[in-house]
Length: 437
Image (cartoon, rainbow, N blue to C red; front, side):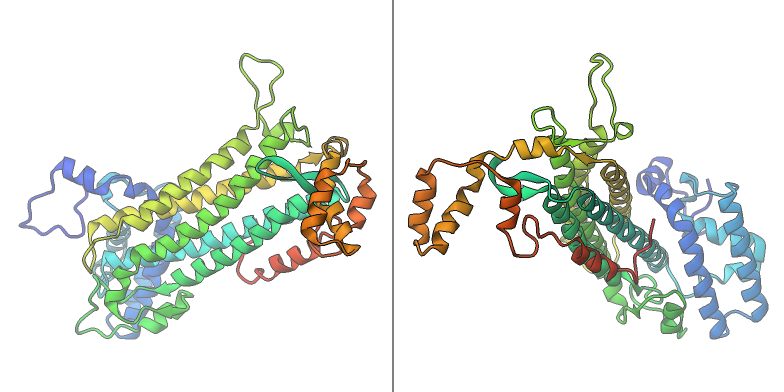
C-alpha cells in the first residue's frame, strides 16, 4: 500500500480494514477533483515562489511535474486508487518523483483540509456553471414548446380536478419561469462557495510563513479569502449545503414537470405525445410505450433531497475544527451536482420532442371551467361577487368558445397573454456565469 502523507517512520501502518473504512469511496470522487487539485497546487506553488520558499528553478520543476501529471491522468496512466487514500497523495508523490527535493516543498504551508476544499470549490464552481447552462437550456426548450403551440386551450387543474382555463403555453412557461428562479438559487450557491480556503491549513492558519493568500485566491479566480482560518472548517458543511439546496430546488421543478408530462401522456389524458426515442417498452406487453426517462427524472428529486438531508445533518453537533465526519459531505455534494446535471439534460431532450394534441386538450375543457369567468362577468355588471358566485354555480353552463375564452384575459401571464420574451430576458440575465451545454 502507498504510504499515506501522514505516515511517520515510527508509526505502525493502519490495519487494512481501517484503511478501507476511512477511505470508503472517497478515492473515486477524488478522480473528479484531481485536475482541480492540480490547479490549486500550481497556484499554491506560485504563492510559495512569491515569498521565496521556492526558488525560480524549483517553481519551474514543480510546474513541469504538474503538467506531466495532468497529461498522464488524462491518458489514463495515472489515477486515484484505494491504496492512494486520496488525490493529494497522488499529486505529492508524482511531483516529488519528478521534481525531487522541490516536490517535497510543495506541501509547505497547507494541509489536506484546505487543499481538498480549494479543489472542491473550484470543481463546484465549474459544475454549477454547467448546471446553470442546462437549466437555462431546459427553460429555453419550454419557451420554444410554448411558441410551437400558440392559443392551445387546455384545462387548468386544482386537486387534479378541472378548475379554470389554461393553455399549453401557460403550462410550459410556468415551468420555464420557475427554472429562471432556480437559476437565482444556483447563482447564489456558486457565489457563496467561490471563496478561497487556502492558507487556513488544518484550520488554525500557518505560523512563521506569511502566505500571499489574497494573491493566490485572485490567481484562482476566487472572489475573496475566508479571513479567519477557523471559519473555513465551520463553513465546510454549510457551503456544501447551499449547493445541495440549490440542486434540490432544481430537482423539485423537474419533478413536477416530469410528473405532469407522465400524466398528460396517459391514454386517459392524451394531451401530449412523447418522443418515442426517449421512451422504453415492455418485455411482455407489445403495445406499451413507457415514459421511463420522465419517471426517473421525477424520482431523482427524492435522491437529491436525501443528499441535502445528509449535508444538513452530517456536520451538526460537531465541535469546531475539522472532523473526519466532514469527509462524507464531499460525496453528498458531488452526487447532488451529478444527478442534477443528468436530470436537466434528460428533460431538455424529452421536452424538445414533446407535441401537444390540441383537439384533446380543447375537448377536455368542459363548460363548467368557465364558472369563474361567468361570475366575474356579473361582477362587471355590478353584482356583488358572492351573489355572482352563487348565480354562476346555479346557471346552466354554455358552450366553450376557445377564442372568446382567451379574449377574456388582458393581464400578462394569463391564458392567451403569455410572455416567453420575459422569461427569456430573465434567462439572459444569467449569461455572465452559466456555461451553455
